[in-house]
Image (cartoon, rainbow, N blue to C red):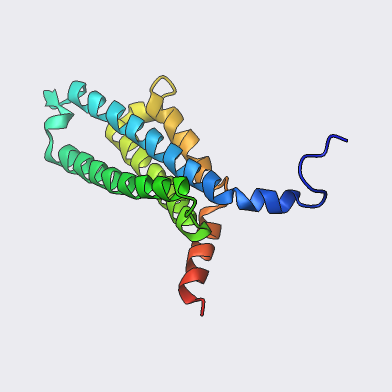
Length: 159
């Protein structure tokens, strides 16, 4: 009497919503990446080494530029995927690409941000330490990165 949908169709219902779930994970990864990147930019402007802010060091600027460029590029793809979802055209392969890209990029960005924080990156008082721990699960739920690669790879060799 409390059945939602048709009996025996639960898995099919779940599978129909996987593209939206995977896109959601990708979008959440982008938001988390943007947050930790901005926190890191603020941090390197204040943190000093050798008498000057580490933001003035060429390596720091290069790393930040790389991360921001990757994040901007990925955001464009996420925006396109969101348009496809709204239009009812987001397919499993494209959603898998969004999830793979977003979650893997989040882990790379957070890892680099921990590095830019130095020893403070491992102190729970700094948000980047928590972001590092939180980012790891992104590559697992909603389908592991390996599963996403399998879905994408199979689509490339399908006849």
